[in-house]
Length: 620
Image (tube, rainbow, N blue to C red):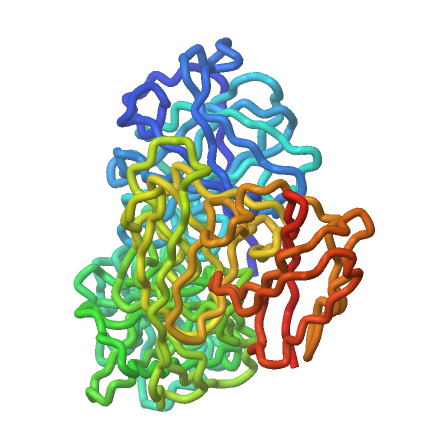
């Protein structure tokens, strides 16, 4: 079997002379955007004055991209917001940009949210350092990652950039980029493609196997395959196919029978109407399609079927229905719908995947591109907090069925009742000195949305909103003006939890088990009703043992603090559950915790004009 390189690198130094469509050049509002980072501490690229106005780039403004030390090898940034002008490759086929690298390395360009919705990525090696270079990507080339297709002929809205892709940097590196444009590009020569299909598992009678597709106007008999050695594997080569993307099927006896696909397969493409589902082919050089089973994307015996059964429970189903999405294998909301053909309230779909398949995934109620309609299962045992609170499936070695409920971690489609509570969030914005348009609460319960839960100004700098939440554990924080500003915490602050696969997120934590109201001071663990919120902190006032408490905790006071003390125990909702005045010259005090529910609590001590807070966990 031939092996082929999945991508070809094109780059040149010089000035482009072709007609171009400017996507990003950082010179006007319409041609400027930023790239939100992922795989490293949160943040985004910035637009700065060109630090090296020379060579092929003397423009005034450029993009600056910083890859933090120790970031994931796949760390990058996606255009947020999307460029005003989409990347239209229906007539042009080449994307070019200017980059400035501090070291020899690479830059990868990925296109997402396309029409059709098939992502594409290519990588270019950069050898020239500390100078601007032109880099061009021929989108007729196949993607370096699945699905292995060409991008030419499609329209994409989202651009993703990776610098030193699949490399870990230490210390951090700073890169610059500019002038991302689309232009005509070079045409590719026609190619020869060899097809091979294993018919051994096909049980019906047939005489002749054919390949029918866009390259032969879906002819039923133009390109027969042959099985000269009678091993059940039919092969044949179609010559002079136009390079690029095509659709095709294996057909029998001049369309007497054909492959039937549902659209959930990894090797297929569905037309916008949903009426036709065909195999997808991208060919930019002579190639051999790996032998596959008839009506399968895989060799015979090397695939399994995963059936999803999703109970709606008490959820009002969106008019567009439920979808499975995410995990790098199930696309975006809207790509893979679940159907309820028998109207029994259970939504299903079956996916053919390779033996050993495993993946993160989630469900959405509707086809929201921004995942705003994603199920909220944070705090439940099937949610992975380090992967967007997604679910996980596999690995599978045989056919399997996943039965569960939307927004519940059940193992059947019998959803039952969902317990939820009304939680009122309040925040005292007194410490915040910038201009406030609106304050928002953002968390795992709304995918850290920029605007899903706005708060109302009650006066006296207190903002409030009430949200109905399913009982469970959540992370959240308060943010201002749709993430223009946000609370910043340091690791170890008592009302926070550090999460993310690199520990890059520090958020407030919340346990919901009934209706509650809470109020915190912005960017602080202090609750609004305490008088200690403006007192300086001194961590020598007391210590507590143990910090994992069953029935009682012993508070030991520092020898430098002999005056009387006010001791308060506060739960995660900011509610005072115990308060006691400690007489002067008292070295220790035993706190009775036997009546408290399991969960996180804060002990606060105030004395001599200072305060200290320490968290403990009640678990029994």
